[in-house]
Image (cartoon, helix red, strand yellow):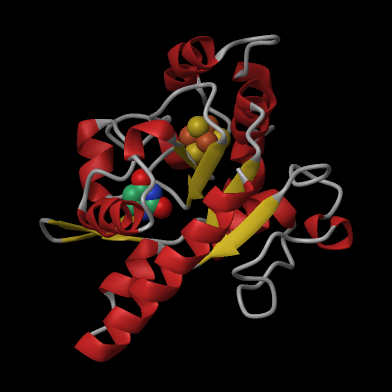
Amino acid sequence: RPGAQEWVPPAADVDDLRAAAPACRGCELWEPATQVVFSAGPSDARLVLVGEQPGDREDREGEPFVGPAGRVLSDALVSAGIPRGDVYVTNAVKHFRFEERGPRRLHKSPAVTHIRACLPWLSAELAVVRPQVVVCLGVTAAKAVVGEAATLGALRGRILGDDEVGTGLGAGRRVLITAHPSSILRLQDPAERRAATGALVEDLCIAAAEA
Ligand code: URA
Ligand code: SF4
């Protein structure tokens, strides 16, 4: 498959992009999903948050970060003093990828082929919104924005240098990579969870201070 490019309208604003996204057949993920999940937030936001892909709840509701991970994100934004309504929230991949287990739909991480296929949407969003800072929530977003070799370890928690953002979507942009809220949900130990939440809040504060 060719990727999303042919479905992305040229010189569009965010509403045009959102209106066009349901028709996308840039990869096979559209078919089992309920609907495309585009973005939320103002198109003149100074801060863009990029997640991985919609989850089960987002797939049903058609809005990004409205499920359990969204709750973690909302709480972290509150702690960082960032009104959620001020940020533009989107995902690297716009359709939910899952595996059916009886009645349950289990999240399956997108493959690099899906990240690659969906890049034209994120590219168009960043071109319209032109944020001061792009925050990558987790490694999938980081791969989409700074390149497929991205890892969290060495890169997280600071505005990346020009040599680190690569030649793709991140080029010429200020980018900060942090943890995905879902990775916090997976922690069982309350102390670990508190520490991970604190680190996410701290990273969001750094991004907001630069925006
Ligand atoms: N996880 C994401 O990465 N994005 C969402 O929209 C929801 C959960
Ligand atoms: Fe298009 Fe992205 Fe959905 Fe694939 S995941 S069909 S590229 S919108």
